[in-house]
Length: 276
Image (cartoon, rainbow, N blue to C red; front, side):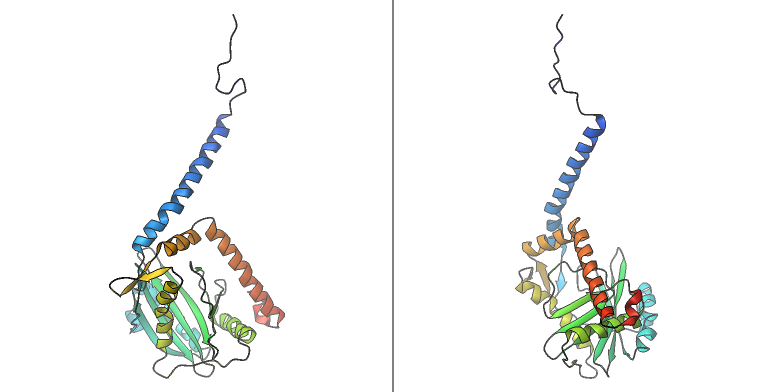
C-alpha cells in the first residue's frame, strides 16, 4: 500500500515547537507595539492640558507638601553658599495635566545668574531637579540643570539647555554652567531683573510654552482661553518620541552629546569636571 505524505509542509519537517513559539512572540510584540503607536496619541491628545497663565503664590517652605519641602529645604543652604539670595518658594499651580509645580527661586545679584529648585508632583510620583540659568543681551539664554527628563518637542532655538542628572553637587553644576556661559555667550552681558520682580522671569518662560508650541502647530488655544490643547500633529509626534525604542535612542544620543560637552570643558581647563 502506498502511503502519501499529506502534511501541509509538503514532506518537509515542520518547524520545531520553540521556533513557532518565537515566531508568535515576535508577531504579538509587533502587533502590541503597532497598537501603542496608533492608540497612545489618542489618549495623550484627549488628556493633555497646559495652562495659559502662571500665577505663582509664595509659600513658606514648611507649608509645602512634605516630599516637596524635604527636597527643597536641604538645597536652600547649598545655593546660598554659592552667593545666591533665596527669593522664596512658590506654588506655581497646575500647569500641565495632573501635575502641580513648585519652585524655590534664587538670584545672584553680582553675576545676574538665576537658580531654581523645581519639583513637580503627580498622583504617581514626585520629581525634582536643580537649575542655573543666565539670559544675555542678544536674547540667548543658557540653562544647566540636573533634569533627566528629555522634552518631547523641539528645543527653543533661543535657549540652550544642558542636562547633567549625574552631577549631584550644586557647586559642581554651577561651575559647569559658568564654563558653558564662557563658551557660548561670546562676551555678552548677563541680564538681571528689577528687584522684587525676579520671579517674573520664570513666569515669562512658563507662559511662553503654549504660544511657542502653537506656532509650531503642536498646540492650539482652547475655546475657554485658559488652556492649550494638543493638535493631532503634536499628540502623534510627542507620543512617538516617548515610546520605545525612540525614547531609548534619544536618551543615548543626548547622553553622548552631554558627555562631549563635559569633555570639551575639561579640555578648556576645568579640572573640577574630571569626576563628572
